[in-house]
Image (cartoon, rainbow, N blue to C red; front, side, top):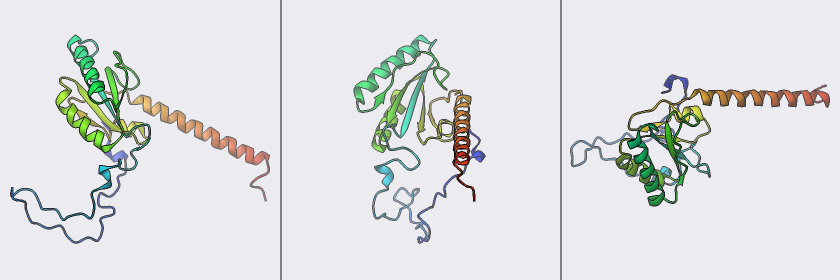
Length: 196
């Protein structure tokens, strides 16, 4: 997966500074702690945490993989795909791809999740119903490489991904931004902007 030292992370206690210490009191099971009550439920029950998108792109993608040369896995994936479409019609479900596509090196289908409630219901359901297949669950934050690696969660065995594709796309975006900036600077020079 990804080298965690390549990234920065927000402080887990951001917004919770200066509070009294947590109690050491245990619940009746003797193992878990009694937590102090909060004024309200976390907003994470209603909207995805930033920088995860809450827009039409969907906050999470779930890629469900199968070996396209294994007839039993193809059959299971086809039946699972149908079940997902019937049981979760509110989710966006893409075609069953019987070959590698994009960064995905084996057959797969994709499901988009738009709310934390959908995430909780579908991922819990998929844990039980994925059968012999593996699934990649990743957020959509606009950083495709990090979303598919460092921020990814796997159900079942992790599968290799062609993440070089994301690096090439990001390099092309960076190159275009630089060209656009040079074009703007050149245009400013033609118009005499920036001169004293």
